Image (cartoon, rainbow, N blue to C red):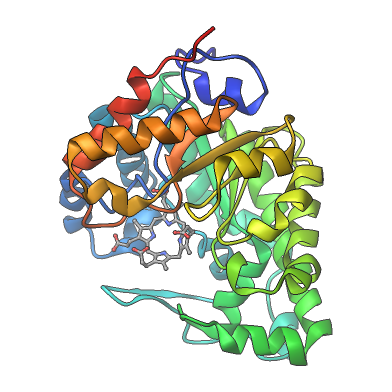
Length: 344
Ligand code: CP3
């Protein structure tokens, strides 16, 4: 089906647009009261993730209510560890926790195969198909996965952490096992993304949320290499790489088979463009905390950001929107982008 609003795909594919498309990382869940209303009727987060009709409903809410230019499927990066055999709990206010973690080769051998893992995620494909049907071509649908390094970090550490020192210790003390686990996650993620695309996804984003805690050399060895493998394997849809804090890897991403590079708010649009070259689109990168400011200030900073990117740009925040962000701030951001016009 032809999309009525294909701004996101045009930018990802290097085609001209009148204005940048806008969506927000973590727009599904977190901010809308309508999301909380759906969530309260269910037992917990995981029930929502695994109930396709409800997951589709909260995926579409930001399109209906906020008018964003893309939908992102309501799911989580942790569904891959779970499909591989590491069950997680999502504890209210505390975040994810894995009762069992990966400590050695034996734990890695006990995981499911990549194809088994991808098959386990049928509930995501069902949610995508329902979402695609209900969107009825209004806006593109974004699928996603976590980057292999970020998923290893949770699988070894067992929870969120400021330092992820247990996960980093694993890289330093068990590098062979680290690479085996990273390869397993990579293979499962490729199978998973391919099936997401078959289920209707128009673009996929790889979230490397913990990129910035590795040294540049470690990042090359334990993360970038595997992201490149995913980019080479996924030829059916455009790809966005969002690696938080990995300003040092921009040149590497520029060489990969991806279409869009996401920037966090610590990265400078002009300098990033110079380092990435003209080929790829950039996404980002307003500080999520800017949305706590006055409408006037949000407008000013958003316009300054749009001007700094100069085009080939997908407007977004520099990381996921925070749960307590005022909806007026979110609307001011979206409205400012949608009122913007490139000079021809
Ligand atoms: O972008 C979207 O809105 C789509 C849905 C989405 C969720 N998680 C739903 C969610 C996406 C894209 C993610 C990705 C994700 N999950 C990342 C990468 C992006 C990033 O923020 O860096 C990471 C690191 C996770 C792991 C995760 N999931 C954590 C640390 C937590 C707890 C804290 C929190 O709220 O982020 C989650 C839970 C989670 N994932 C919620 C939602 C809506 C909140 C759960 C609830 O409603 O109770």
